[in-house]
Length: 320
Image: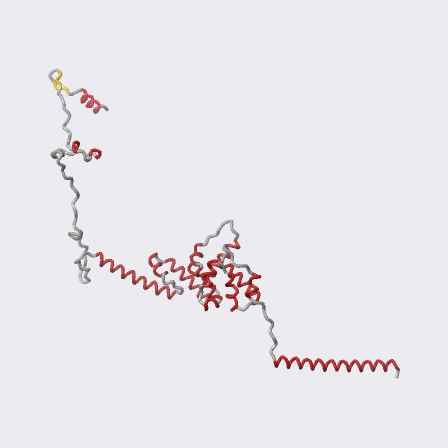
């Protein structure tokens, strides 16, 4: 055999032996690894702590920052980082400031560990209730000059806080809108009485409204009974009733008008008509009718002639 071919054959056999040894070693290592995993569970990689990571990703709540927008920012960061939902309240609580921080530490332990309950409690403490959101929704107006995107985001936050689409179905949201519209269309007295029950469903609203109407009718009947004079009987159903004119509708005794008492220095009153001059009120000397002005008859050529002053007045009165 050619020495070259013999050398190639020996080399091929050696490589085959080495490959077989490597395959056997790999099989042994695989079996060993499987056995180790079966005996002891693999150690899980520890995820970053939400409490320490949130301080790097989100600054504390500012004094002029919108609270609802801050909650939405935290929620988006928590979902992106993959934090456990149970760790959200513990991570967000230390970042709250001012009134929101006071509300967070005033919650019950059960509410403080539930993120949704904690969020609703803090918002309610700060006056962000669903009822307030409904009022803000109906009072919302477009502001010229402000950025449209900011206004739309604010309106969406108000609408979501009012209707809560994350907790209610589409049918429940539609019922809530209908209840709000119905309640706002009621008269003022009925609206105030029914609104005190805070109805959230049509059935609750109708029940409260029926009770209110019954109460108002009862109050109206009692008021008519109280307005009836003492000793009077109510109308009888077996005969026709006609309006009566009461002879003496006054219950309290009447008092006469005050009269002036004459003073010792005041002269006796005469039958003459008193002067009606308010600026002379209280002056006893001007309360009598003054005597008539003296007159003198002048005879001219055997005929009476009035004084010149009276004659001029008569001539002036006869002018056209």
